[in-house]
Length: 139
Image (cartoon, rainbow, N blue to C red; front, side, top):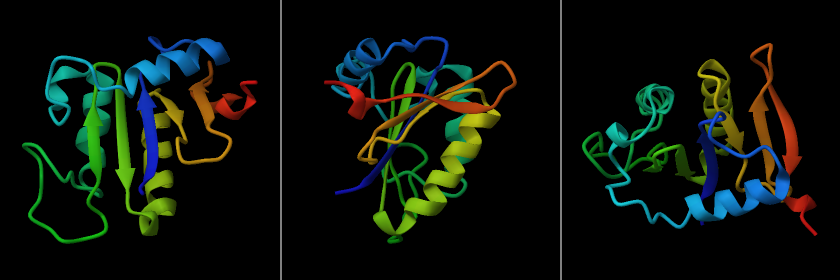
């Protein structure tokens, strides 16, 4: 089991809890017709995010994969409007810090998919990330 985080294009993601939950389920079915290790399929902001993230957390697969046996390797899935990343649990704190700071830098949304609450952040008008809702609030 991995420690999972996701960033997404905040302009293309719904901002209502129930609709976001359905959208997230659709995104994580990986049904888009492309390779999920290819950053060319995603938005400019998400591609910049990906290229910066792999400096610290190299991908396990794809054209940017490293020949390492190391717990910094990440299972990175790149969709058209999301980047979903599975990390080793030993990397949970640095992974969260890195992804959250990059999400803020590139004005992306952020989901802590491994949290019991499933916190979903969106950038506000000042460029800060704020929790809009928690997936655990769905009844």
